[in-house]
Length: 193
Figure (cartoon, helix red, strand yellow):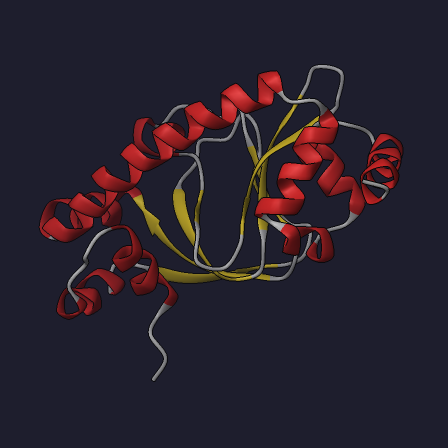
């Protein structure tokens, strides 16, 4: 049997013991979202944290002017959600949308807390993964402030080229912070390099 995607993720960031995995997996529930379904929106209190088994989601802000700015795509093998709202019961400023028909497993707060307190390897995974994510976030914020849209596009081409095939142009545009028309010009300029 093929190794579970969640176990692969846990073992890629921390040496999660295989024998502990069935105990952890028992805390998760399954759910499916349809393409374009909004999983949560700004103002909601996030009730679950999700792990993507199949499909793709995007997390995004909407500016007061109504412009969407994608901050994160979660594909197969990635967690998505909004931890501050989830843990503290406060409204989120983010939105989460399924970009494709998406299968997830998820934890509610009670099961997350029980898993964290009863499975030390899951706790260590979260600590190590959050340290890694904080460092990556700082790097991403620095790049976002200093990169031109052309540089952001080239970085996307180099780091996640499959997204260019998987997602519609307007989603890519929202990720790099430009209009679809501007993205067309950027693509044209960058194919000539």
